[in-house]
Length: 425
Image (cartoon, rainbow, N blue to C red; front, side, top):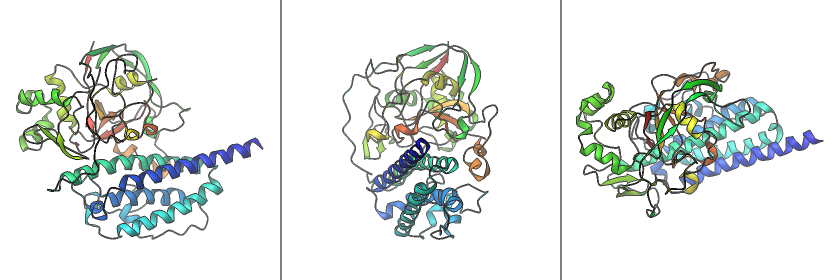
């Protein structure tokens, strides 16, 4: 009897988590018109319609087709259009050409979504207590949360590219706060363990296995680098001094691709936000900078970027709390005053902006990807990208943990990307 009760409770919780995640997507697109949802402005920026369809395709492909007896796909042709990079499943439409697809219509994509939701309800009710089903549904929920964050970053670039500079929504007024000054916080190295352990409630495969490594003593900035601090770097000639830049970054500077943070005005006074153009908030973290820009600033400041192991060691045991999507601010905010740190004096470990680290995105020792096509989720991207940590103002609190590793190419800027400083002790 107890096992039956546990299974029922497990199915109920899984169903609730699924409904919550799917509802959140619909709430996030509520401010948009259908015309907003079909635009692609960069190869890495996907149309909102594509995000909605892709996460639906994920549940249909990896949950419903293999596990729900008698399931009838909505339209078999959609697989090629809305597959992202799962070559083991079949061919796909090129990523950089997702914006040329006027059909299926936005209306039809939403109908497909409802079709899948009804079938997923049946799946969870009938076999939701099967361990493999529960794992796949849970992975799909976290996958949808990732695309909710991408959706917000992508629509921001879409609106930025429009001469009318439309706003996604009205942002709250800037808050008055006693902004903490900058200082380095000393942290002890030694033998440390990072990564997700076997008892983690959920993690992606790239967070495993938990393993030991040796860290030297180090220091981290007590908060993120701010807009006003980054402006000083620009005004001091930071974008004119090749000695500060990695070779690939300097090539982008010389080509004119890097001149200032992505959404800053030429006079360095305003920035484009999800609420439209606004005066730059001086003490808010600088956002939408590439790895190359973060690294150059660190050199200018006689510092460096943290190793991902240093960041995780500092964040371990720290409650996930900060300026996250749950708060509905939709933009980075200044650090809270003294007394709001994690006990070590570190602030803004969670939220505001993803923090660039100096660690390449590679496999941990002993890494094994998920079996089958799901193994393509993370493992095959372990080349040429850099690890970021900590989430952003577009990340859900429940989505994060100290071991979470995301990754971007060094040139990427359209996401909410910022940084803190580090140095050897």
